[in-house]
Amino acid sequence: MQFSEVIGQNAIKKKLVDGVKESRISHAQLFAGPSGVGKLPMALAYAQYINCKNPSETDSCGECPSCKKFKKLIHPDLHFVFPVVKTSKFKEPVSDNFIDKWRELVLKSPYFNLPMWYGAIDVANAQGSIFVHESSEIIRKLNLKTFEAEYKIMIVWMAERMNVQCANKLLKIIEEPPPNTLFILITESEEELLPTIRSRVQLVKFTGIENSALASAVKDIPDSEGKDINGLVHLARGSYLRARDLIFSDEEINFHFNHFTNIMRLAYKRDWMALFDWVDEISGIGREKQKNFLSYSMKMLRENFIKNLNQPQIVFLDEQEKKFSDNFSPFINERNIQIFFDEFEKAYRDISQNGNPRIIFLDLSLKIVKMIRA
Ligand SMILES: [Zn+2]
Image 1 (cartoon, helix red, strand yellow):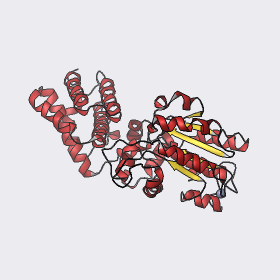
Image 2: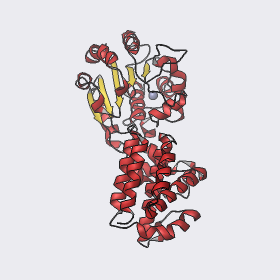
Image 3: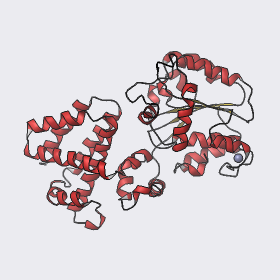
């Protein structure tokens, strides 16, 4: 991975590159920030840059023997730790048990989240962890001499999933690692890390990807043709994953469209029984699909609001959506658009953070009943 392949985040790239040029590489760093903004891709590009034999002012060369191995994730001095699950085959699992699947997923695209990783190892409903036996693996690997590289790199992805015993065993090596070692801890939730770990690492704080960079990355996705790129980028709030999720297939659009139009009609009619059935149904479709439904709904709300402003040239709706929106758009106006957005955004956040779907969707439905008549 080269910096040029990391979407946006130019200030962080510059800071990391300047650090290398000035030989200020702090040995334990924490890349913290929301999902989908490029923390793992940045860690990979940084690791490759540090060890490149022929780096330029701004990037690794991509062609030296070191770069080639980093690119394929097979450099002997590049190590990964990530959450894993106990299986019948692995009673005391460590990351290396799953390394082939990990490489496959990262090589496909380093932009993914925890549910996608669990999906890749077929454990969709499990709660993974970085278990205590991982710590002895980490310590053993870092005490090896470097094979070929300038720096041994240990990337710990979703470090907040590290269990307490594991974290405690690592305190010493994070505090005083063997020479030429770089720990990159990656987290979506800095506050879930033990304070003893946090105090030993240098924080590199990630926020959303710049809109312009995100827009050009989205344009490179084949299915994005004819879609409302700016609207999508606006809704994605700096997350490439969310932007990618907003490019729906026809089948997904039908599913979300039906659920969206239903809830809006039922809420307007105050048809409580049917509304509770709707909540029941949507509670059972799984978290990723629920998140996509909420993203789709925000897209519909946005388009209807704009339609309502009589700016048809910037409204992106397909035929069935247009037909529905002819009647629906008058209900979305400057009095309720913000609160609609806030409530859907809140539901999205709560679903992402493992809240109870039934409670979240019931609450949202009751709010819609109020908001739609506002
Ligand atoms: Zn190179």
